[in-house]
Length: 67
Image 1 (spheres, rainbow, N blue to C red):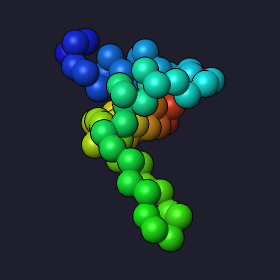
Image 2 (cartoon, rainbow, N blue to C red):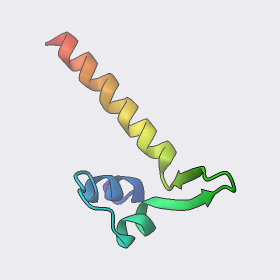
Image 3 (cartoon, helix red, strand yellow):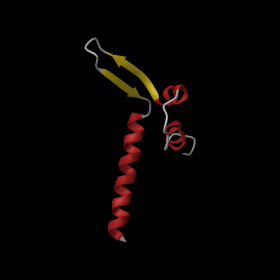
Image 4 (cartoon, rainbow, N blue to C red):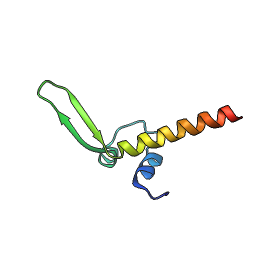
């Protein structure tokens, strides 16, 4: 589905060079800053991006081996 929000974001920001507020609001769900200075960033679509990356890796490997 070309209109899936994860795919739209993936295509839109596939080659960013500068982090902007728009990118943060589109891709980041929330950021936690801990008392000890650690930071954790929770991305929107993290599971979808992982599945897309795995799909590409598997299919690229299969295609390369078959060719």
